[in-house]
Image 1 (cartoon, rainbow, N blue to C red):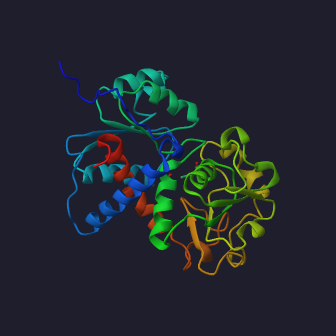
Image 2: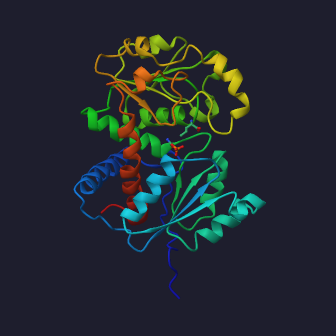
Image 3: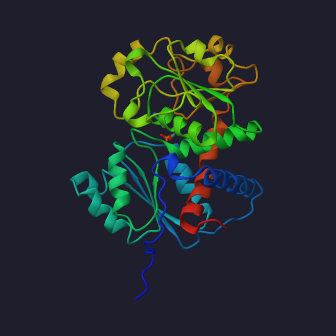
Length: 312
Ligand code: CP
Ligand code: NVA
């Protein structure tokens, strides 16, 4: 009997940005541009009309949930949303068993969870592509959207300088992978006790990653300034300590004035005005945060299309 969704050969997962080659990333971004323009023109684009996406959220979400769910419906597919509260994952069913079962019934899975190892275990036992919708270590869908957004506003990202101001977290580690793959330089600045973990970031050439103690220096002459919450999901018990440690890592107008005069500002959201960024910056003329958020949907539609159907 022919099995549905079970072509085990050549399954591609997107567990971190470097699971795609540079050429594949550029392909997905090009498709995202086409898919976005169709969306804006009310043209249907339903290549996944008989496909099902399962989403597993072990952490909260607004953008990831809505962008994947709306995107899959727009492409003609269906969506099933699971959390720990309403699935057997919350009652300790092993992730491997969950993967074996779910991947016999759906065509693609998106997971938001804690340790990267957990999504890797799921992928190892999955018959269908698995997408990382955020782990403690990486947030590759967001960086795809951020690069797409940068390219909508600027010709190229090659050779550009991008400042990361704040925590060594899933976003900054994924920016490092993007710098290596696409060929730009990330200026990273965090408080002394919150430096990057070399076991996650690996050995990166100084052509792609430069570390700064002074956040203002990290912003000097850059093309984009970006930041994120001081306390990521899963680290809430460190909130008070982090608020003190990160007090000088707030992106404000004076920090933005160190960057090129046409520099952009990005934040993956949700943001805390008055903590990692001032309202004047995030709501100001250089900010492209709403484009970033919308573009999650367009790039993820292109990503799901690529992982399920390959290049069209
Ligand atoms: N940026 C992002 O992933 O947002 P959510 O946590 O709302 O999904
Ligand atoms: N670094 C943040 C991103 C939220 C989208 C977190 O992990 O909570």
